Amino acid sequence: MTGDGEMRIAAQLRGDRERASQRSEERNDRGAEQPVGPERATSGSIDMTMTWYAVGPGPVDDSETTAAAAYCLQLGDDALIYAQRLGEWISRAPQIEEDMALANVGLDLLGQARVLLTRAGELDGTGRSEDDLAYLRDEREFHNVHLVEQERRDFGFEMARMLWFSAYQRELYAALLTSGDQTLAGVAAKAVKEVDYHRDHASQWVLRLGDGTSASQLRMQEALERVAPYVAELFEDDAVSVAAAEAGVGTLPSSLLAGALGHVSQVVAQATLTLPSDTAWRSRGGRKGIHSRPMGYLIAEMQHVARSHPGAVW
Amino acid sequence: MSTPETKGSSGVGSSANGSSAERSWPLWEVFVRGKRGLSHVHVGSLHAPDAVMALRNGRDVYTRRQEGVSLWVVKSSDITASSPDERDSFFDPAADKVYRHPTFYDVPEDVEYL
Image 1: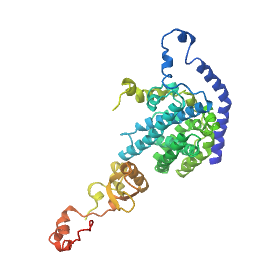
Image 2: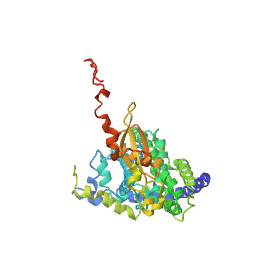
Image 3: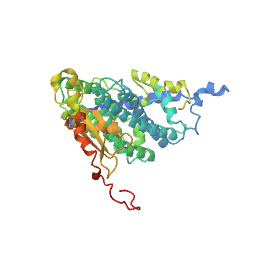
Image 4: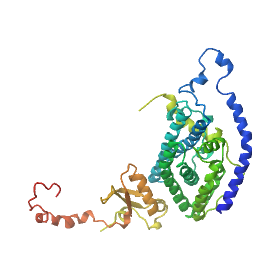
């Protein structure tokens, strides 16, 4: 089972890499028209599009540093957005004990996001703080995968999502223990223990729901099918990850697949469930800032207090 | 004698009581050891579907602030507890037996913790 699934997802990823060059050209086009238009630069007035970026010492012209910054940003965004989603479970879980468990997982992820976003702000030379990055970016500037932004559904869906995401993160942080970036290696050392627990929590529930009643088994299988289209994106080698891996800072997402899939398929089999076969469509584009419908709503809820009361503290 | 669980609600094993009993998880008592060398202390109770999940819920509910290095969970229905009705016969007879306390020894001044 492990071998088949791996080959299948690996085949999907090969297809993505062929399309990747085409997409990176699109991105370059967009990048060129972004910051300063000539008319605005000569107008003499303050260029509002630039004030945002002018907070710090200015972008560091060093491709390795840039790659590390972008890499921290996408890992931080994954953690931040999933933390926000998990927070929605408080008062909605089957039992108050599970409220606590899911909130704990969310808080672990939020802790990871804080360090990663802070590091991204340091490295990209803009001097943006964790709060600036979390609360003052718009949808297209977030680089998380689609999996974490999807709306909260039933508890089975959450456990299926958490199983895949924590299995991915477990492999990721284990690999980042040897990162060339001290901060990333530090986050990884702390986070690897945290996500180990997240993975265990999700596994325990998938086992119980899968190998439970006929109704729970049906719903757990349904949940795995719902999550399936979002899985391949986690293991896609996007331009940022490739650059970060080359710089010795990050790791290739595709290298994490074997370990994550090994764990998931073992749990799924033990839970008397079936790992879904290839899906007709798959999510993509999250790493490039292209998101699905639920993302805008999530960001609106997450950011509205910070944007309504700029600089407020408590 | 009565057990905490069987007194009030239907408890663990009895699935005969219809949907509400099936939907509720059994109650577990949680014991935390604060640090090496101390004994486990009862900190509270929680609901969980089974022992493995009870241990995990105990971790999430009672050790969020580094309260412990070890956890025990015991199904509440497995605890046999004394009943308030028996309090008089159980505990009052010890009330007038002061000689059972070590109060008739002279404690040397330099011994702090005796």
